[in-house]
Image 1 (cartoon, rainbow over the protein chains, first blue to last red):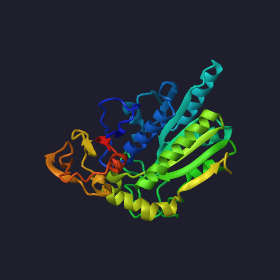
Image 2 (image 1 turned 90 degrees about the horizontal axis):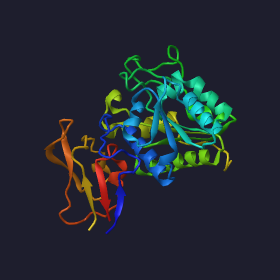
Image 3 (image 1 turned 120 degrees about the vertical axis):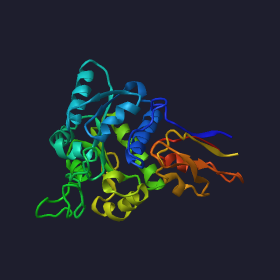
Length: 252
Length: 69
């Protein structure tokens, strides 16, 4: 009998996630920790947390972390990467952001990091609302979705259309990898880990900006059970946000 | 004998593991967890567990801490 699963070494011992029950943030952090373990990056990594639920990353991940101002995680990561490079160190730098951070407040920083081809990795958790502040309408909210600030559902006359981040990042010439994954079943969780690993490997190879958008649930603000939230992603949201790899410079 | 180890202090009663277990060996217990709901327990009287680790993979709170096959 052998042990086939244990808690990743990059997770702080005896830490308990403080996310809501059933939230995919915990799962995403676990996958990131597993990939850091597999690529043996723990001692060489600097993680950049942002504002929102994603900021709690540094409570659990046992790597060096810095908190950036709201939306500026990619800009901070650029500074860290370049400053260390100037000193002769090749640090592994990644950002862990929510959709409100990456695609709303920090859209300029994020998009221009991709356009500059900064050699960093960005992971964006897309739960289609501003989760930490109470579930307001965000730029990624799907058409017709009811939030606290769109009580009759998102409509195009008043709110406009949602942003498809992974496709936009894929259009930037500096991007080496852009993918969208989901976490609603085992197959997709394994695929998500594979894509995160690929994004991290591209940074190690120095190919440019790599990006993974993770379609995630927010059971508390969607007012659904964790099971129904996963069904909502499977039945509704992947029609709005199709899964797949949108840019992969090694295989295109 | 395959088995899993659940940390009851970490379980937040989302019950995602109960749905993925192919043998339906994870059940609600009578213990109340931190969220005020019943936490899960591993109930494998007939030693049916195959050690697939799907429950550990899907658990968002890392409450399933070890899996042996």
